[in-house]
Length: 220
Image (tube, rainbow, N blue to C red; front, side):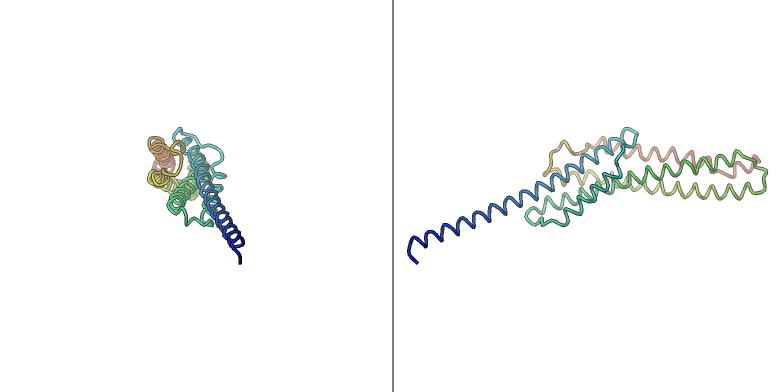
């Protein structure tokens, strides 16, 4: 092989190596950018839910957001993230935390919605003829249904409150990799958590008063 051929081969090899390196760098950048984009969208969805909780209302779309964040978590775990392991670890932690908070937000809303008819059914029965022979048996059945619905609501609220307590730590992990503006401040997190617990407390008090059958038996 003459010198010209050797030089040509060297140039070709260098070009190939450069192309491969450029492709790998671009592919790494693309994957990393994709992860950050998923985290950002999840953060915006989570903010809408937490802000709604903090302000005392449930925004629409929580269920769809929970599904979307679940898809993000699955996508992340299917990716090759060895070249940006710290980001991937923080993103996985954040996405899972966000997903579970969204799920509990949905569970709280559904559980509270199920509880309302149970309370009304028992209250309606109590307002009826307490002298009827079946009054006590029906009252007990409806009280048991109310207690079961109240228990599910309590579980959802306590799970939500626990996850909200851990949200700050998850945000600290992901903070170096995302714009700080998408993260949720501590005051809003605390306010959302407190409102959820307070709402349950008020609902429980009302349900327990309605379900106090002993008080109604005395007045029959």
